[in-house]
Length: 161
Image 1 (cartoon, rainbow, N blue to C red):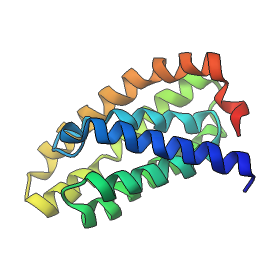
Image 2 (image 1 turned 180 degrees about the vertical axis):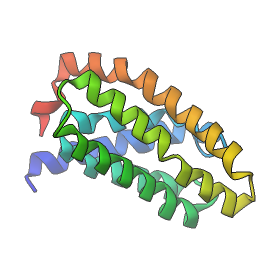
Image 3 (image 1 turned 90 degrees about the vertical axis):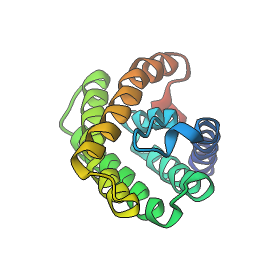
């Protein structure tokens, strides 16, 4: 891995952790309103951002989660699964907006893993919990689309790595 790629991903992981820490009371509940999830859209610009996102998710869950063991398995697993699906699907989808929409749908759907985690850890009802965490994820990812898109106009994420 190039030094530049490593440094950019380290900065991304640090940003993910910092934003997760700021909203920790809202990011680790049955709603999962984790603003840092908008960084997931970076993989539509370059698949190499997966490293920074996964490290950020892992460390955020390690530092801030009330159910660390579960979150390290389910939370990191859900992010890795959704990011991988988005990266593979990006080969067939043209256009940044279309990729971000697919990414949002994939992340929203795969929140069933987080619902399962919360069901196991706290015995919350699976379907209702899936609904609430999926809504939280959808809102963050949908709001994140224009934010990331317009930041990209200035920074050019695809050229950073």
